[in-house]
Structure formats: structure tokens, C-alpha cells
Image (cartoon, rainbow, N blue to C red; front, side, top):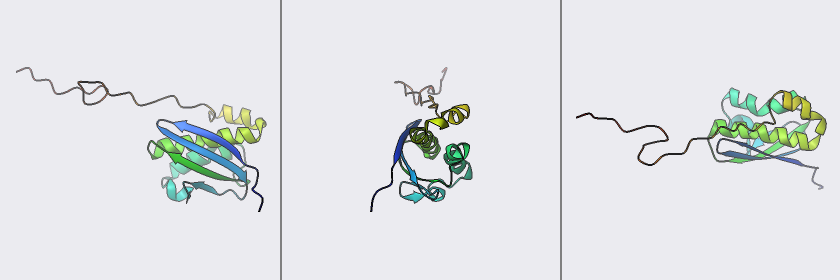
Length: 131
């Protein structure tokens, strides 16, 4: 059996990284070998993942295979969205304007601030006692 032509994209958000492959199919989205509805139980996260496909009106044309790691569930959903948008761009350059207009190609630059020495977290201080 000949493998269908695949288009790849890497998405990142917070500490999460998603490697996305898109190929012609029935619109099945698989994340870490699970259906997207099982991997992302909240409907808001499922909506985030499907956003690039809905913007380009290709939700039933392509199968999406994702391997994601790192970060939490919300960061992974954002990373998958970014990866799908980049893979769609690899597939067809004409999608760029619609994806850009909806802010799907921009990597969210917000990261966790690193912990400082002598403190519990980045900014939290120990309780001050005057006496």
C-alpha cells in the first residue's frame, strides 16, 4: 500500500511541542494515538484544535496525526493548533491570508518566568515577620 502524501508542521506553546502530519482522508484527528475527543475532554480545547481546519474549510478533507509532549493540556491544545496551521500552510500557500487574519500562524510568546533563588517561586516571597 502506497503512503498518501503527508504535510508536516511543528507547533509550540508554553512548554508544549506538537508534531503534526496532515494527509488526505475523512477528517479524523488523532492525538498521541487517541481520538481528539478522548485526549482533550473539554469542548473548548477541541474547538481550539479544530480552529485552523474550520477557518480554511478543510475539516472533512484531511486526516490529522499529532504527537505532542510537554506542558499541560491547554498548552498542548495551543501547540496542536499552531502545528495544524503550519502544516496547512505547507500544503497550500493560499491559506496564509485566512490563517494570518485569525492569528493562527503567530506563536504565542508567553512563557513561564523562571524561579529565583531565595524565593519559593519566580516572585513569591517568604512571609515577613517584623519581630
